Length: 338
Ligand code: PEP
Ligand code: MN
Image 1 (cartoon, rainbow, N blue to C red):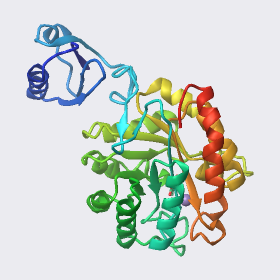
Image 2: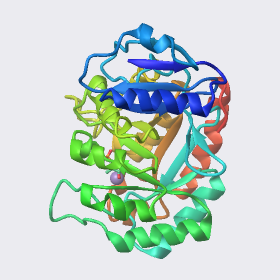
Image 3: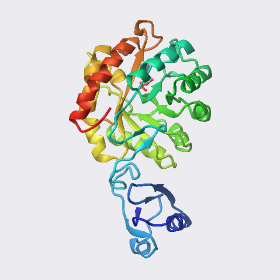
Image 4: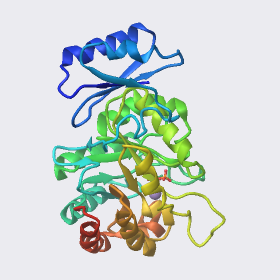
C-alpha cells in the first residue's frame, strides 16, 4: 500500500504517518516527490483499511500497489526520480550524464590522465574497477583498496565523482568510504545479500541488469535496494545473453523506454559491455540517447591496446571526445541536453 500525502503536508504530519505505519508492524519508506511525498508501506501483513488513513491529517489518499516492485514502480511515484551524484549533476533530469573511464584502475598516472581528458570532453563522473569480477580466476583481479585510493585521490585532483564496483557485502563499507557511487555488476544482480547491504548505506547505486535477467527480475533486484531504505538507484542496461555471437552481448535498447514506462528510476546504458567492440560504442551510444537513456557508462582509455581489461571494447580518449560532440544533436532531437 502507498500513502499519498497532500501537497504542503507538514513534516510533523508525515512523521506521524510513518510512526503509525511502523506501529502496525509495517516498514515505512518515504519517497520525496516534486509536489508531494509518498510513503510506501512494506511488509507481509495485511494492509489496514484505506479509510483509516484517509482520516489522518496530511493524508490525501491511501491505495494498494498492484505492481510486484512496489517502490520502483511508477504507480508509487509517477514522476521521474532525480538521483543527485554531485553538486552539479543529477540523473533523471533533462541533462544526460556520461560516466567514462577505464574498465580497471591500473595505476595512478593512467587514471589521472584518463580522468582529466574525459572531464574536458564533458563526462560527469569517472568510472574504474578496483575489484574486478573476471570470468577467469587467472585474469587480473584489480588493485582492490590501492585502486580505491587512486580513485579517491583522482576525484580530489580532477573534481569528478567516482563510480566503482563492489563485489561482496563485506566490502560495502570500505568501497563506500572511497567512492561516490557504488556499482553492482551484472554477475551480482541476483546477489540479494549484497543488494541488501548497498540498500543499507546512503551512496547512490548503479545496478546493472543481470545478463540473463528479465526486466521484472531486474526491477525486483532494484526493489531489494529500495526496500532497505536507499532510494538512490540508477538502472543500467548492459546487454543480455542471446544466440547472437557477432557481439559479446546483445544490447537491449528497447529495455530503456520499457523500463521508463514501468519505473521512476533513471535508466542508463553501457554500450561497451553491451557490445564488446569499440567500433559499436559510438552508434549504440547515439541509439541509447535517442531512445531516452538518462546516461551512458563508457569504457575509455588513453591506450586501449594496452588496457589490462576489456581493451577490445574500450574507446580512446580522442574517440570519446568526438562521441561527446556527436551526441549533442541527438540529445537535442529528443528534447535533452548533454
Ligand atoms: C564493469 O562495468 O566494470 C563491469 C564489469 O560490467 P558488467 O558487470 O556489466 O559486466
Ligand atoms: Mn569492463
